[in-house]
Image 1: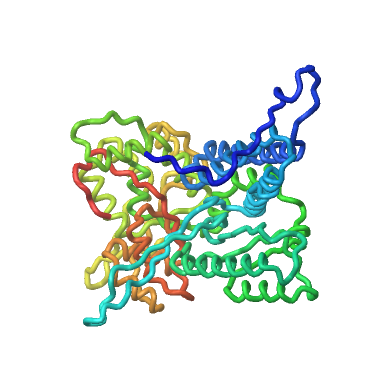
Image 2: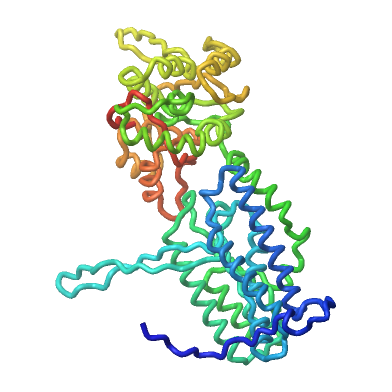
Length: 493
């Protein structure tokens, strides 16, 4: 392999040991670099503390941090090398002035200023329609590209970018300003394009720019024109004065506290009554969720994967119980019938015991004059059932996890609903769902209940069918499911 000649002369390293042998400590050769090292070290310590908190709260897999953390470590290594170099050359001084540290600190400031962090230095895919083929007007293969954003926050609903390339003092007509302006406007358009193809809870993410070195001023019409152009793309901006007014200043402590409360913020928006679908009923009674299961040759590959997931993160104490505590729970009659059918066919003895503990008593039947049967109206106050405390005590004997005392078993069964659909979007979605899923998701939607589910397939169908300006059902979708251990083949809910 042929070695290419160096394009630049290597830096002239003047190590402390080479400059003096008198044993006297004369301090760092490059005090400016030493100061940057201190700042970068502090930044890395905070990022690593945040990562430890993610790991402790079982949230590490849901937050993209690796690329940003790697950038901070790389910056620190470069700055540490410069502390051994005397700042006696223009190249060394230029390297210090070109340090990426201010940008990394601004990104971290933006992250600490918000909640619901989902990623730092995170990429989004943009899909563009393929070029039109002349014959028949058909399009070719879609073109895909990507755009990176500094911070994804608010559980995915806010994307923020930081720009520190604008010097604090800059001539309004400088080429630097023109180049940076064009670059930022282009970035904003790309981010909005990605946001239009991304929806979280039926909403598109908003775009926010942090511009700490920009000082809006009528005396700088070029800067004001740039800001107006950037705002015209649909982005929001926070400039230097806006950031100075933030009080109290965001700290690592407040960031970690918000992380501890991040899931509880989501639970706070739940309805007072939760609609439990068939997948969650199965997860509540599954041996995979409630006890140590020995792997058997008969297990379906899906069960083996769920055992691995359970080993990494136990479903009940970490994901499901926190979402259910303190709220009444209901399920539709159709979901209950399907659940009981699955339990009867493939449930183990312990799964069948738990199934009897989490649901209310079987529905009574009344007779009409023509002898047709119908369900009596659901009446919580009049229905006799075993006390919650007794049900929890019995369930606890069949569960290795500590069950919160405010899990309000039993889950009540709703009377059948005729599902008269008033909204066009409800009719549109209803036609895409199976009988069981229509019962679960449309009923919860009509009643204004939060539906708890692990059926990601149905959740995606619903999200795609909700158009901009429409409000779909409130869904809380768990990223993992639990089957019954006797399940040899997949049984759809």
